[in-house]
Length: 527
Image (cartoon, rainbow, N blue to C red; front, side, top):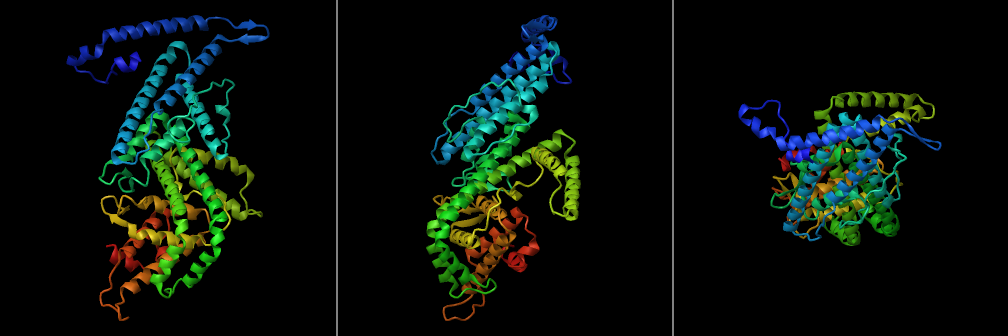
């Protein structure tokens, strides 16, 4: 505390006029006294010979290190638990959300400062007592975060295996008290709940270009500065574990949607089959297109809220993972020189796996490569390499009628959105609409990634068919003749924007999209 709070760090160069300001004799004298007392205590302890108590031999150095580890473990656990243990109002007004953001920044800033003070103090004292202070700090923080992650994923019926270096005989319990955040067990879960509260798609607007979540008036709720502050507070391992916890929540949402679809939506399989028959073939405009789509939306209205809730949650969680990956990648490039090495090694490993896969008689990955793949995958994830939106979470069986249901859902919500050039996103026209453009796009992409690529192609074909039917309908006057200047409805514009953003976020080649929607439509309408 004296070293970090009362005393200022010495710069590399000091002006003569500032020497007195940086001298701080009282603080430095107090620091010297404490350092001397610690060094005398450590010297006396380390000079002792091994002590035998019965058959047990006690080494003073090991005893000192174990005591410091236990105390450091308890201290870090207490600091992390207290830092995020503050009330979160459930009010959805903008003023309340801004107030929550200010409290979050205040607590995270205080946590970052205190963590830095503890780390600097341990680094300062390590030479005086003969320990590896930074290694001890890293081990303690990693164990705490790993145990916190294990406590959280138990809610989803999962468990993470502890690595060898994290297994310790000494296990000190840390705070797992229920906080005011919903369904949180430890500080890691509370942080996730805080992020979900600040990025609620029902209130905020996500902007991919601005890299953050904003209110309607442009006030930033969560962005790159928030994740940089989190990186300073819980470190790379903490931010990476946060990403893993979000992945488990995504897995839980996908399993819940699959269960809902199999149990509820499949009971209306006849309805989805009727919609599929009405849309077949995809290259042809359905008869009475306007009334057909209206009936489809009306008949599937009871599925609209569950589907929206699932897609909204999936998209929100995936966009959070995307921001965490970008922060880790940025930190990796600035603070280490291994980013290019990791990319090269990853490419070489993938080429080797592909070669072995094609040459193998069983068509499988060799067993000796699986541990390497697992280890390099963890390292790449910790360094922010890869696109989280390309993750396959579950191996699910086919869900009949899913592309048709997603088409009807998107069609039913197009009129509730408009494109905002400032945010570069489809935003809600009315605050009462609990929907935001990018989370829905990311949710649709994530859901379709779990199934065969034919689902994606079917949905793109339906999108193209819908755009074509609207253009033909809007280009026809009341007597059935063709209008010289067809009107471009807002649904057409929004659908083209939705498809374009879906292609960007899902890494769909433009040539694949143009197989179903001509390029000139994007060029003319979205120019």
